Image (cartoon, rainbow, N blue to C red; front, top):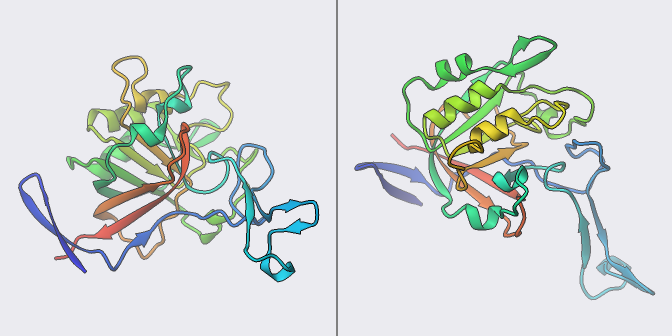
Amino acid sequence: MIATIKYNSRNYKIDLSKPLDISIPISGDTSDVNAWYIEHAKIEPHTEDKFVGKVSEGAATNFNDIWFNPHAHGTHTECVGHITEAFQSVNKNLKSYFFLAEVVTIAPEKYQDDFVVSRKQLQYALGNKKREAVVIRTLPNLKEKKSIQYSNTNPAYLLEQAAELLVDKNVEHLLVDLPSVDKEKDSGALLAHHAFWNTKGKVRKNATITEFIYVPNKVKDGTYFLNIQVAPFENDASPSRPVLYKIEE
């Protein structure tokens, strides 16, 4: 299933039958990736009086209740409403879903007591490339990223200047394999979030941040087309499935 995409007067070919899913699903198991000090997500049969929504227990259908927090459980995409007093919905702010993206791999460097992605590292990885979306894979890139319990572990994050670089390059969609682009405990400063959405200037309402992705090692650094599939919740963040498509030679 080959599609030809015309982008900035240039034609690209992608194979829609070969998607590269970089999302982490929510299974409702205690081994699911988790952050922000809350219990794991739950997917359980709905119960009411003697009714149990499970075919194996006599019901006509499987009828599950799901409890989760999009920021803490699995891959999610968020808009500026994550950090504003006024309500903003990612379902309304994200108005298109297909983007030219660059996948880069960065080993976070030591900064004070933390490990961070710096502006210099990001500049080196991107060079002069102009992309709508940037996908950051951090090292080490182990499969355990799909099940880490991140609370109180001080994971790596982006420095404010790194987020500013992305704004300078007109990158509208940032995807990271971290629980947050900001430091776990920063007294609410959220410097990278604020910088990326430019909250001190003309707010970038169409820009999104996607966290908790996992980019398999088989996916090489380089240019792809990216499809961000977002569940239609009217909320600042929603579970999402970002999918990459390799550009055919």
